[in-house]
Image 1: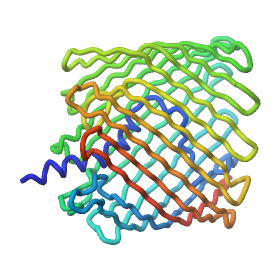
Image 2: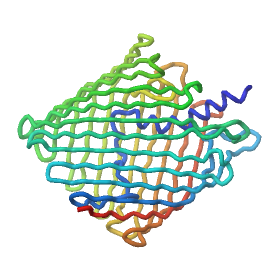
Image 3: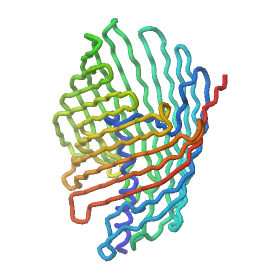
Image 4: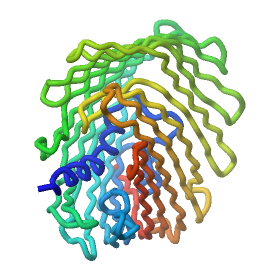
Length: 407
């Protein structure tokens, strides 16, 4: 009778981290793009297809994302086998670019078999240059994560809650003059959980952003932006509105250094409780390319809607990445880190600090095969006694990937 609340909390902690990333309409500054070294297309012209398969093993020291038990002093871990099949279809033409990708994740645990799962992700992207002035771009991505069996972990019942997520975006860039551009973007995110009775809340987020920019020199572009987001969470019982108004800048500091910045005023309106909050928003990112490496970092602060607990937070995020592509050397590395602090709009909710680190060290044995060692660390602190969660994952995998020209 007392185990159920613990189960619910563990389910939420497992699912929420991924969904918060999907809920944001603005990409995290300073982080690397979605294109991973694991499955490159090598930029082939016309149609190309890249099948890939990764097989590996991982040790996870905290499968339930929980704090250590007081009597044991440690969390329960397990080793698992991973199988990641994927495919990437790409077309590059004179005016049109198209891509579609799929990736599956098969995870089989050695001891806690009830947590075995098969999740799937897919997406499409289409870009077309209608004229010298007008460019249109549309993307859509979908993720399906299943609910696992209920098992006993760290002495209490535990289950990972399944979810489905879809994010659609459409944008246009229109050159009003040779140096002035109007950019418009609409995106929508939808999330649904398998177990809404365990206080996990899904819903919809719609966002519209407009930016007017002018290029003054080859090194400096300045402009203004306005964005509006509306969030309907928990089957419409929580309703939020977000507005941002500010200035933007894109700059080139040197031959290999570039960046962007934005700052302005943000307003959050909780329509359900008729409450309003306001404050500044900030975004900053810088990237520098060395001869054999690329590094970058960024910071952002803004109001964001949050799935899972059905509310809104004032979010601060600091991130950085390092990338050494294997195309220039047989030995390559990739690393990224993010620190995030979420201060909930609701006074009764907990403030959460999250630190995420991930690194990959690989060796390209052939053009189509490489061996990788992967390490990931996550720390979450809810600023209460017993609210600290640490998770280490260390693994090794063999990746097979070979792009093929279709025509």
